[in-house]
Amino acid sequence: MRLALIRVLLPPLLVIAASHARADIALAPLFGDHGVLQRDQPVPVWGSAAPGEAVTVSYRGQTARTVADKDGLWSVLLEPMAAASDPATLVAAGRNTVVLSDVVIGEVWLASGQSNMEWPLERARGGAEEIASCNLPLIRELKIERSISTTPARLAKTGGWRPASPRTAGGFSAVGYFFAREVHRRLGVPVGIIHSSYGGTQIESWIGDDARNSTSLAAVLAARWKQAMSEWPPERVARYPADMERWQKEQAIADAAKTKNPLPWPAPPATDDSPALPGGLFNGMIAPLAPFAIRGFLWYQGESNVGRDAEYPELFRTLIQSWRRQWGGGDLPFNFVQLPNYADNAPQGTAWARMREAQASALALPATGMAVAIDVGEADNLHPTDKREVGRRLALLAIARTYGRDGEDSGPQFERAIPSGETIRVQFLHAGSGLIVRGKGVRSLELAGPDKVFHPAEGRIDGDILIVSSPNITRPIAVRYAWSNAPEANLGNGAGLPAAPFRSDNW
Image (cartoon, rainbow, N blue to C red):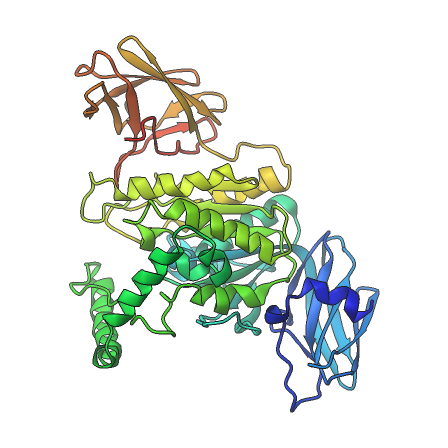
């Protein structure tokens, strides 16, 4: 295939940079030994060589040829291939030859977000046992190293593809690993996770400049960053490494004693190499990944935007739509984790409830799915350790919606509330074979009357309907469930999946 026909797949800023001092053929860092290529889709393969050098790429009986352009950039497109678990070599040849071994074909997902996506399997609940018995060579992770850039990077920094084994699995994203394990178990094909996350980061860092500047929040975000930079004079920036070292020492002591760190986490300086730089993580850790063929996205982020929930719906929609455009358009599946229960020093506060609602607004976009985690958090732990269930719930979404397999993929989701005398009847989507309650009585229910004052309420289940009442309310007009930072959430469906927190009002 001629280069002119293929280069449209690779925006100029997103392809691997050629080195004018080097003539050897090189593949982009996303391609390596033990790699996973996406099945049933065209597969772009790209790299660098000497300008004008003829390049041939061969894999599983396919051969594609092209010529490196004047900048030493080349790309080819392999035709769609069925899943294949047997190892094969991918060869790129010109004046020299690059041979990649053990390259398989299966399902590839990009997992991103902040620390709860980054959280390694070795620190998850049950992680030690999982690692010790891990013999899943067809589950593989490509870890994208932390990188911040003021412009879209041309090279991704990676640690190479790693098959899951007792030696390697401990460093995998725990959520990504458990997602991949469930998908692999159900589909029987290789599963690759491209893991690109960075703890403690806000959503605006993951949105490219053009997309972010097209939002109604562009001026607000720019002014906020300018103000943040003004608060970091050089002498304060110079003190930061020592502040972080002190915090890390205290954290190690707290971890060993299972207590809390007495020092506040030192936020990084507001500089051009800060993970808080708007667009900086998109530029360094997302832009250079396209157009690697993937099935879809997994996202676990929002903790660092709590308190700015009014901004989040527009920013989250912008992120989803702009990432899809980055991969050539279309509605690539985008499944995300709704934040779990976390007290944040105010169990009855509502900042986390509002952020969960802001996250859920993304479900208005096509091909999105939300894994509810309100029942698997830890009220006193920002990093709940039950990553197994979170990964499984993300996998249920993919298995049902992307792969078309039978099975419930969601807990009950609020549809409408209908006042009926002294009660409110709540209808749900995904109620399955009926609502269920874990324990005695539905917890964390509230009702309000015309005065808009909420009172504790009780719930009675009638099949797939929840009937809510309160002795303090004779004419209820609004109902809320699990509407606080750290509620007791025990409503679900017959599939054992939890109901998403909701409110019927917009007060």
